Length: 268
Ligand SMILES: O=C(Cc1cc(-c2ccc3c(-c4nc5ccccc5[nH]4)n[nH]c3c2)n[nH]1)Nc1cccc(F)c1
Image 1 (spheres, rainbow, N blue to C red):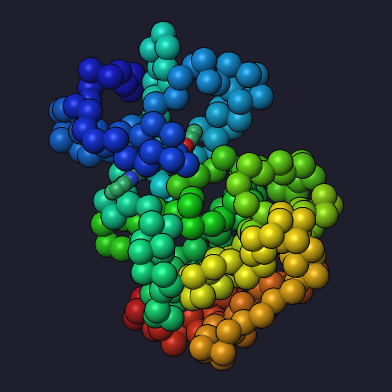
Image 2 (tube, helix red, strand yellow; image 1 turned 45 degrees about the vertical axis):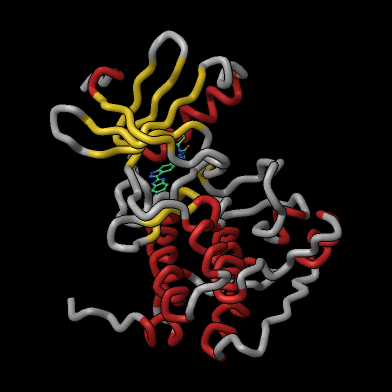
């Protein structure tokens, strides 16, 4: 199917900051609402960015999971590339987190369960995300999380250097120490995400410097506040292990008492 801009009525601008130029749009023949991401070809001129974009399109267009934002298609005109992305009606998770400060244990465990399911799906396809953090998550119509950005996903195992423009907060020791890494990096990030959902700040944040954060990550300098339940504390501790081999597997996360307690398995 060849798409073009004429197929869409363009609506409001959506994610301004992190996500660049994204607009709500309605496909004219069906009325289906999407998020249309516009990238200027001038911005994607550098060959590695074009390769990065092709890789991201390649990865995301083959993924089908309710907790992973869909890429429906793409097209370009002489100046721009357009991505037809799933519209997440409840917006960006980090804005909701900043508004509430921190989430209840029930809400956090539901989100962590959804993330574990999405990561399980990705890892089975040998895709590691490497950039799980609230800024990359959106919320759908039924309050479900959608992993939205695959800017850093690669096929496992991988030793590519990760030069992050964002914070180090979510990076595991093996990446900050520049060592080889595999999909277990996403298990570490899941632990960081769980901590930030419940506490409101990431566990190794040290606003004095990136170097200080680096040290706290490398030493796994983890302090879990008293108000966090024993179940959540246990799950966080079992994910934030320096040695990737010691981290809880995703199947074990989905069977963890803290997850089951708030998300009883519906009779299948
Ligand atoms: O760049 C992104 C990630 C991405 C996702 C989005 C994005 C941003 C915002 C939304 C929204 C959305 N819904 C909202 C509701 C209220 C307020 C704001 C909202 N944003 N829905 N879907 C989105 C999708 N922009 N960029 N993916 C990408 C890039 C290149 C190739 C590729 F295959 C995928």
